[in-house]
Image (cartoon, rainbow, N blue to C red):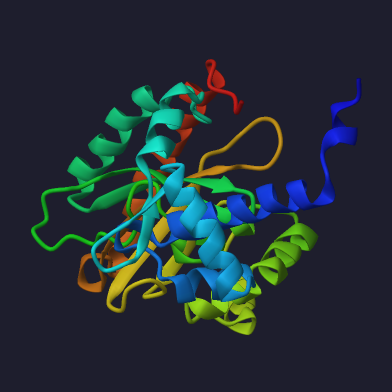
Length: 261
C-alpha cells in the first residue's frame, strides 16, 4: 500500500509548520522566542502559531519559561540521543578545536551548514580574559551571519549562494543585515575563508576557514572570534595559518569515516 495516499495535504502542512516552529525557537537560543517572534518569522497568524506552540509544549517538544518565551523541550533532547550525529567524528574534532583556542587564546568555533542556516556544533575558549561568545552550541543563524556563516556561503556556487540569501531575506533583515550589505561582504570573501567585522557584536572580529572536502561543497568551517584589538591586521596571516592547519586536520578526521549521514 502506498502510504502517501493516506497523508492529507493538511497533515503534511501541519508537519511542515511544526518543523518551522521548532527551527525558529531553536534559532533564538537560550533567550527563547516570544509568540510575536514565532508568528513573524514563520508567517503564521498568531492564533495558529499559538495553537501549534501549545500542542508542541504538550508533547514536550517545546517548553515555556517564566517569561512566557518558548524554548526547546526535554523530548527534543531525548530524541536527539537516539539520532546519529551529522559529524561522526565530532569527539575527535573537539581536542583540535580546544588546541586552537589554547594556542590563540581566543574563542574557536566549529560551525556546520544546515540547509540555508549555519549551526554551531562546538566551541572552545582560550585563556584571554575578555571572551567573544558570539555563538552558542546548537544556535542557528542564516548563512552569511558571522565569519563562519559567510565562509560557508562563499563556498557555495554563486547561483546557489544568491538563492540562499534570497530565501533568507526576512531572517537577515531581522538580524539587521540587508541583502545589499551581505552581497558586498560576500564579494569581499574568498571561496575558502572570510572575515567578519562586527556583524554579530560590535567591536568583535571573526575570521573563518572552511574545512576542505574531496566530495561536494564544504559544509564545515572553523572560526576564531575576539575583540577587535586582539586581531589587528598584523596578526591576521598567523591566525589564518593556524586555522588552515586545524581545518586540514579536521578534513582528515572527517574523511576517515565521518561522512555526513
